[in-house]
Image 1 (cartoon, rainbow, N blue to C red):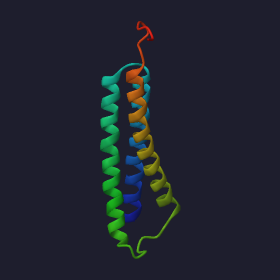
Image 2 (tube, helix red, strand yellow):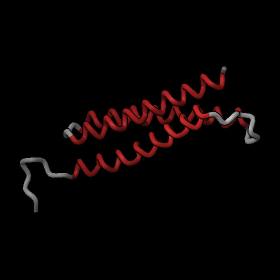
Image 3 (cartoon, one colour):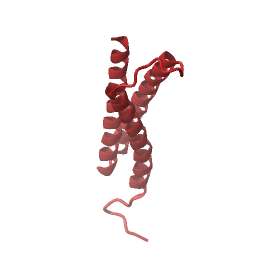
Image 4 (cartoon, rainbow, N blue to C red):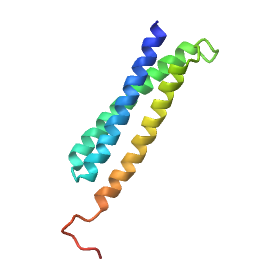
Length: 108
């Protein structure tokens, strides 16, 4: 049961990270870069916690197959990888939003 609880924690933190990263993108698109930065910070914190949990699972396995590979574990790992990818891409996209001229600016 302990393994299942740890996996569920990983899933929760990975999902939270994904949600925060997507929220950061929406905030940046709306021009609210302060809110976007707060959401990015929350995403980074959630990814960090998910990564800590993943490291715990790796330690439980000890590289010897002690951890049973289950569908929920694969699902949690998938969520973590997607969250990390979205976090990285959102940082680049937010930077591009920052560079866009505001509605009152002229293009050169």
